[in-house]
Image 1 (cartoon, rainbow, N blue to C red):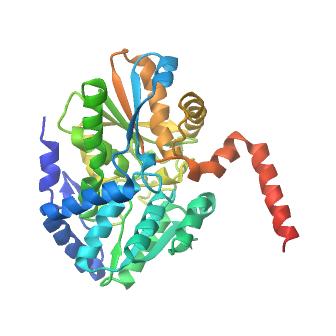
Image 2: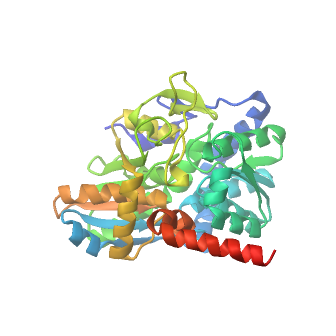
Image 3: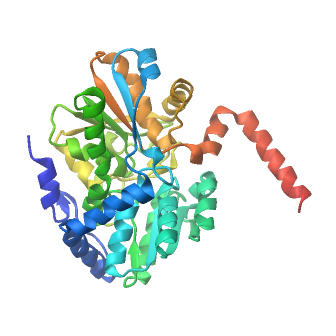
Length: 417
């Protein structure tokens, strides 16, 4: 088997044919300087010691490795475990790469931070750490996500971030990325664009993989301590791919560990009804990198749909595209209906409240576990917790109560107007 980790370490922007840095000349100096800074800091033990200390003191690592005994018994078959990244400060894995990038930006002397966010967890982590380190913070968010993830918008604004709703295009994550890129074009010298996943131009896919790999490193240690062996499967949801690369990286050169990424199957198979990139395998260049993208018949970026804002994205990490082609990572998709079924089951069986994104991985686990033997161990990366999805969950699972709640709020606003 190829030495995948070594190939990623040696990469200068490409993973097989995927990756690159397809950016305007106006920001080339910005991304080139970032690449040089990261490669230098990557070899600096002092930088990693600083980051590890921040993981412990700020984020609260290590996160829990939780046996799902009742769920495993109910399903029959494999033994299930959750790697609970939702226990990180700000509620998701996103803080891992935000911490890393903020420290890199500070080493470079960049004091203005911009970011895009979909589900809001990346934006919340960015706003939180900018407040902690005294940095200017601007967050771009598709207008639909701005509305459906309102709790996170509130916290970002309370933390001092400027949150800009993007009303162009589909008004989702894709459009937030485009808006952030335009910002960088006008502020190329003093700004660090804190991309929220393992996509974008070099060095972001490699850099964020390095900052997220702490997840899999902890899973290895915790799995050996808890069950006396490495897991047989590691499952993770896949939007851009940051939590998946974090969970998978440490096991890439362990062929006995099966790695499965779960995309957003949405509510149908037609264009605009899902965000499952590996169902069509259409290659292209967008937002600074070459990878698989959902496209229409003319090669334009196609609309996407998902119950989860964080998976509602047209492209996928060039690292995951390469690992797919190499046969090292397998991919599946979970529909919105399967996710809602899993939501009910997981909450009532284990008392966990995963984010809608993470619930895609749980939905796949619920289907997979009964087909496996009882001596099989499956780890589900719970990339975040679900308080942010309160209104989405209520709309689908308690629509009458949601309507009543909105009517009460409207009455309250009218009364106090």
